[in-house]
Image (cartoon, rainbow, N blue to C red; front, side, top):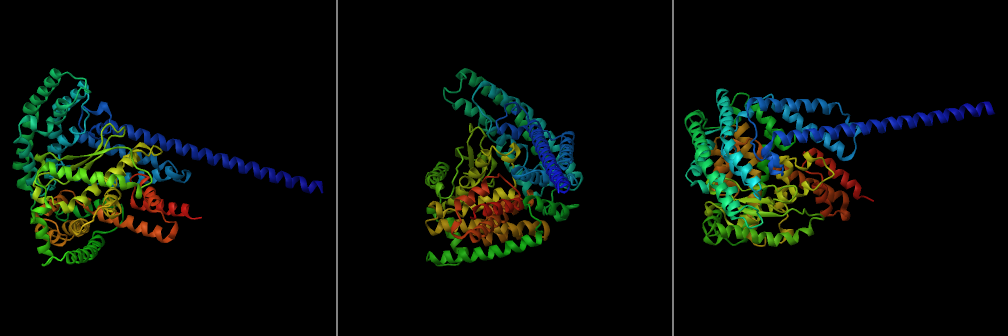
Length: 598
């Protein structure tokens, strides 16, 4: 009996030892994978902060404040090589050894890298650097206005950047000329708008130009800025001299090149489908901007259906007001009646500030955790023109700089009051500011994820946020409700127009006619929008597709949980992992649903 039992006992002990050894090996492999992944992320983040100084300085990296991004061919080639090396290292880390957020980080990083490396097969994409929505002239104002100005050292960094800016212009012109050789130039209308922007800057006195904005802040600052009045004026005089001697000549060089070299070769129809290899490029951009595998034809059909649905709601709302007349007459009424417009830029800004005071206290109804970072409302520099879209600029992670809602105060007859509530919700809270500021606070995530950006998620969330207005005490009159519907219909029409332009042969006029006729928006405003779609292919697709995806996930969660569904918990699940591709968001919400079940 003993002879039988002993081997059995030894066998059991051997199995246990083997199991423990196997577990130890597995844990060691998991720990090794985790360490290597963290090392990879840390090294990449440091690389980004060194090689993307414009972004780095907006995040508070002081030493980046004297430089512009390097757009030389050597620097761009080095960035491409860096991405390929990252992918090689990432593939050596087994994602099966990772858990939780680390596994998500691996998947998101792989997704983003794969698309970036695929774009390297189309080097013409790096040449499209000059348009009405991109270029060194816009970086000049966008980057400088986010630089701190609290000391003479800060002012010196601004002066160094001003002195270096002409080189950035030459680099972008070299890229645009390379695109010209390859048959890739921004389309006519976009370049004409670009010329208007440049003329607007050049027409301003030096101290009113965007390049002087940091020094204007320094001159206006209180005693908390430890720079004497005499030194402030001396630094401002240096900036003024640089604007006259360096910035203005570079702007004129840029204008001359656009007018004499690029515009004569620019196509009247800027469809990617008409450019060498453009159809393949567009399909790639669609995948990048939507984080889905939807084809342009499928997206076009989705847009048509959504426009039809929303137009029916808008017609019903028009009828409920008692207005006598058809849809077009109602829209003309909304765009011409003086009661629907502010009379001054300051009144428009005050209107948005009043909305902030109404919405901020109501946010806890829908959100369990709110970001600590404040936000503000400011005017877009007028020289950027009436066609420059409203936007959001993120604040700094240390909250020393707030998030900013940048609103266009030019052409007040194109800024109706009935659109303001939807636009405010989109750009500030609970839209871009709430989402972006919350992401910055997610210290359990690697740095790059706290600042990641996926259009379908970020713009999808902001459009979804517009739909939360009634729960926050807005949309209390039929005109503001019409504004919300018109904004959503506009984003649905983008699905039709962007794919129509770049995949289905639509002309510029056809696109303007469709989008201005279907969603209750002004024709001039929509002409600027269509030109943006030519200049920024596929970007406009992410808004509506992302919003529809989030709404579908919310309904899925509501159906699965019934009375246990909590809107605040759902919002926290969507927001507390930062910006992610939509397929990753599916898994996040599925995990949250499982966690809410008994």
